[in-house]
Image 1 (cartoon, rainbow, N blue to C red):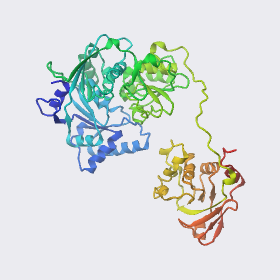
Image 2 (cartoon, rainbow, N blue to C red):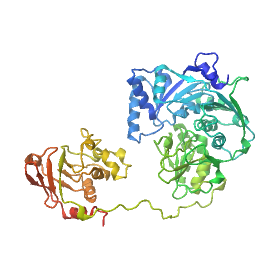
Image 3 (cartoon, helix red, strand yellow):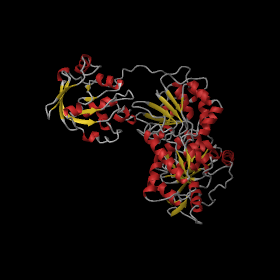
Image 4 (spheres, rainbow, N blue to C red):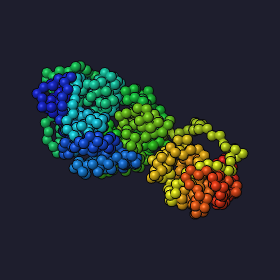
Length: 602
């Protein structure tokens, strides 16, 4: 048998397995991340399942260290609660990337089996172990039973021949593999890697290549552990293990060879990791940002390469460099070795350990039109944001960040490229409302919310603050105000909102005003307003007035009552009984800004 067949046979109680066999496999380490972890737990709860073996079951919070996204924070807390109740170890937001922790802490050993909600769980091939990414239901089933069914895949034996050029990094090797095989030739195969080049690779280099097995379409890229890898693992884990190797007469579906001496420094073009080209084809391409990290290139060796290039240099003007070590241990090594100081003096942003931009959970995202060069493993459209992402080695990314354009470490200019004005139009002015079209009298139904101290997070929660189009804001109005979450489904254009005291307390967010304009709410009545909110409403030409306590009873106004509010007379009339009352004065300044259509209208 070959390596994967031996591993699967050893974990299924069978003496022999062959491609196509479907077997139940015992899983040594079973992991759920903050991305997907909450759904794993819910699948267990909803189906009345319990955890098979907590000692082999783990959470790793690596997608969004810090819980900067509120939904991530909610899911993390939910998973922590479940972990406490079930005695499950949590590698929390301070730990780093789960697959790297599994290797470094010896949660998985050569010849072992590992599953995770991480699609790059096959990174375990770097140490000659079997790893598989899975969906939430799959992981829940493994947590409950300790096993999972697998179809034994066919295997490919890939031998890398020749002398590795000095300028070819591990990242270049895997990008060259992608250039040669794309995503289809190795699709669904377990690929074993052999040759002198492989034998001489460090653990970090093996991790870089193994982490992109998914991008190659392979089930896994398996590295037979050589003496160098065995010694490295012993040093970091302190554990003795028995690697699994293929039999001399092992059967493979295909045997392939590539000459590494022909490999070139490569860059993956935006959109597809397999759309690769010699770096000379894109050299000189101006960049806006650079990222070094991810499970592909966040190891200490990557950090040292980066520091060597950045030392005594600065990131190019206008370029943003983000650096994210893979684990807290790597972060601490960077600190102890003075690398963090080098990064910061060069002008880089250094974040806490984790996956970063890949999962849209931390640093590494980019905006429309932004050109990024990254050490990540994926550059699918939209995955790291709305910009374009080139993939390259840490050395190329660091050199490019200093140069201001894509370049190689041996060709960093003395003076970086700078941005020159291109006369770009970032938008067209919107048509202005004319003052003669703006009414001074409004008739509508009251939407009564008799609540005091409604703050801006209740009006328009901060999880929506990235929304800039007013048309999109209305749907989120009051969705964080208990009892009024259905406001947007019930309110109609022309309705008049009537609230209690200190309406709009809290932050300065303009969206808490503009969301009402989005819904067609023409004005707001309150007993009093937060000071910033009052200014924002006036400047946005959203009429607001205050009413005296007792006016609801005096005019018999209830939710749904039809009223007319006149700005010029500052009065409110209940159209159902004809009763009227005075409101606070709609001041001349307020009227002048209102009739202009807003503070910015001339």
